[in-house]
Length: 207
Image (cartoon, rainbow, N blue to C red; front, side, top):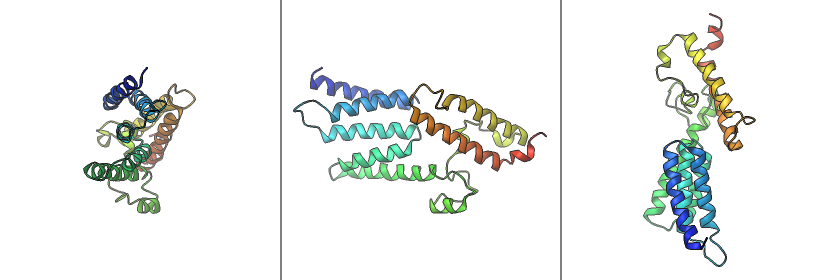
């Protein structure tokens, strides 16, 4: 494949990456972004690397990371993209995106509101505010009407969803990217631990 065709294919892959990411096809999206990134960073012998094309690939990959709640990856890619942006409006736009991603990364790191020191150090907000910190209910895909259920039913949902998602994300079973499975499995375990304590499931067990 000649250089022009390879770069054209990279542009198509970036569009496909964005589309698949919006459809929550995260691993397919990331594969497209990675392939496009390699194409623009390694265009071929004697062909100069275009900073603008690399920046575009980094931006697309950062968006894919954000959709998948991988804020560490998003922050790293946006920082790299900002380094390749010329001064002006584009740099300002990337700086705003980076600031937004850093804020989301910080809040995602706010795992346990009972750990007051970590909560304060990470500026997570008030521990009693459900909008502060990581949304563990979203991680475990719990129903929106959870608070309207009886305590035993709430705890039942937490345990069932954890078991269901553990079967999906266990690294020994998962067929996709192992690093992603490990991250998702860890987040599910953290969500269960915090919610079981918040909902006082040990008090309702066996009732």
